[in-house]
Length: 127
Image (tube, rainbow, N blue to C red; front, side, top):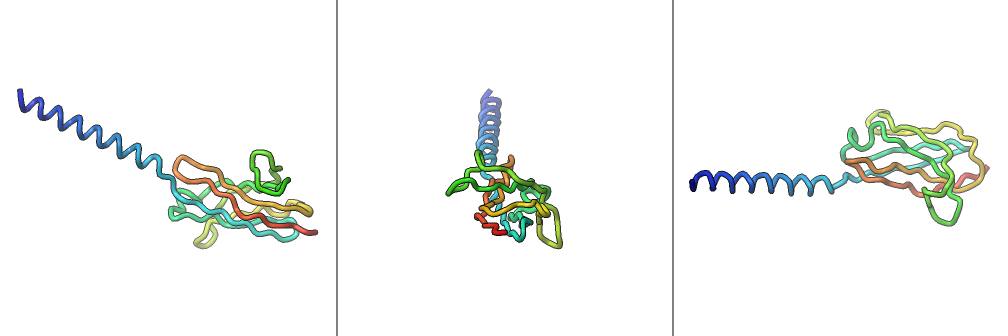
C-alpha cells in the first residue's frame, strides 16, 4: 500500500513539473529583428534572429507607409510584402520597386508561436 502511494505521489510530481516547465517555456518567445533600407521606391532588409531557421526563414515582412507622426501598423497603409529567404548566410527580403513616393515607411514582422514580432526604424523616401 505504501509503495503504491509513493508511486502515485512521484508520478503526480513528475506530471506537475513537466506541466509547469512546459508553460514556462511556451511563454518565452525568441527575439527577432527586422531592418529596412530604401532607394527610389525599392525596399529591402534583413530578418535576424538567434534561431534563424525558426524565426527568420520564410518570415513574412510587411512594409507600411506611416500616416502620422508615429508608427501604427493597425491603421497605417500596407504597401508591399515579401518573405525572407536565405541569401548567403543571412535571411533577406526585397519588395522590388513599389512606386512609393515621398513619405515615411517601415517594415514589420508579426509574432509567431515561437518568435517575437518586430518593427524596423522609419525610413524616408524623397523622390
